[in-house]
Structure formats: structure tokens, C-alpha cells
Length: 220
Image 1 (spheres, rainbow, N blue to C red):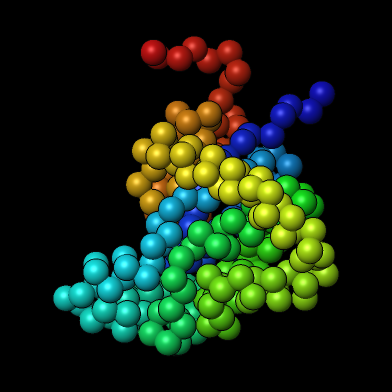
Image 2 (tube, one colour; image 1 turned 90 degrees about the horizontal axis):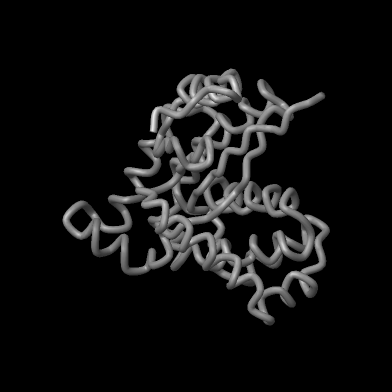
């Protein structure tokens, strides 16, 4: 009898470079563990107010150009995390909330997996192609190119269902006191891994949970 997969709740911001870097690690986890794990994707607010956040927090460090250089330098050592030189210096998304909102609409209209697929395409559009994915016209163009019906997706925006789902994610992230993106919640919230966590660290912590006897008593 097969046991249920281990649930890993994965919180990220679509504009976060560390979540873009983490994509290869997530792919490797799926390759290694297959159906032993289930990643549930959620979004949190890091760049929801990017139009004010970056100029304010990076005022003394070069503003948008300084932040762009920081992002490019951070990803330079990761061969799978390609970065376009124009992101943040020339292409300046105003907010991550719009892509998060559209991804929730896709999840409600189609499926969680379709939303996961489009999240990767949105990230690629920004980090690799330097497209402004805070712009709804850009997002709906990507949706249509992927073969989805943008009018169906738009209905979940218009009637508020996508917004409700996104707000639920943001509120859950606050309730969990998550520090930022990406965050991995393992074992029903008993363990949280945050930030630029290496693949071996992720794998070791997940395998420890997979191998833990169900009858093992809690210390609390």
C-alpha cells in the first residue's frame, strides 16, 4: 500500500531571483523523489510594491541600476539561472501582485499544474527575456501563446475569486511569519527552510521526513 506523498508548501515571489535560482533544485527534487513528494505552490508579497521598494531600499546603492547589478551578480554562479542584463535597469516591473493574481486565476480556471507551468513561463519571460510581467497585456499574451483561453482566465479575475485566493496565500505567509522568498514548509509547518537553500540541504531534510517512522513520538 503506497503512503501519501510528503507535502512541501513552497512560498515564493515571482520576481525573486532566489526563487528563479531555486527552480533547478525543485526540478532535481522531482527527478530524485518522484511521487514521494508533493510541492504545493503559494505566493507571498516581497515585490508587491516594487515601484517604491527598490528606489527606497537601494537609494544609497545605485537605485534600480544597483539592484540590477546585485541580481545579475547573485545569479552569475548558477549556470541554469540565466539573467537578462536589462532586468530592473531597463525593465522595471511595478509589482509582483499582477502575475501572482493571474496565476491564481489559472489555477482556479484550469489546474494547479497549469498554474505551475505558467509560473515558470512568467519567470522565464522576466529573467531571460526581460519582459515586464507586471503588465497584464504581457501576461495574457504569454497565456495565449501557451494555448490557454485568456477570456476564461479573466473571468476569475473579474469575479474576485483569484484575488481571494491570492489574499489567502499572503495571509498564510504572514501567519507563518515567513521571512521571504523562497520558503519551504515541511512536516505541516514544523520545519521551515528559507532563502538560498542548497539542493543537498533540501534533499536531506525532505528525506529525513520521508524516512521518519510514523509512530515516532513528538518531543513536545
